[in-house]
Length: 215
Image (cartoon, rainbow, N blue to C red; front, top):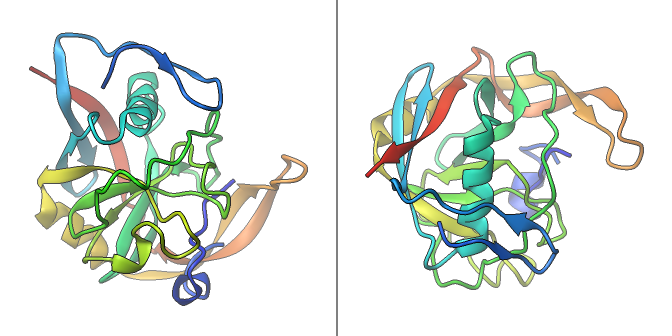
């Protein structure tokens, strides 16, 4: 389901790699190809963003994210949640405004010491701290309230940083938003249903492709 932040300030504004190893949830993570480094290029409809991942500090989360990159999951998804001065979120709403289901959740690594500072990338999740799948966000500010152990004893897992293209991130952040209908999956039934959602860009901004950068 579409991930929600649990801190009170956001609830009103938003909708609510390493060798092969298994996470605590039993998910087998794919082996990282040796000819690739830890950078991912997001080509968006308004420019490029390069992200440097940190598999040493967040191995499960990085492997999870790279699985989605390799599968092409992010291609054709939207920045569906944009709050200027706070964050931009993407990764699970397709260009037709329909939620794109993710896979098995990854266990939280929010205690890794990485902070939700400006330019870092972190995982979206539900109130369950171990519920992150595909959705992620890029911090537009130093968001101390999202660091472990806030806001609920866990915080939000940071797993990398933007190293190039913050001007693109800021351009996305400055886009006009509104309350718009999205087709989301009911978490209880799995059925698709239309729902009014806040902070959705009025002019869709898409991730055209997400690709690993060769060494």
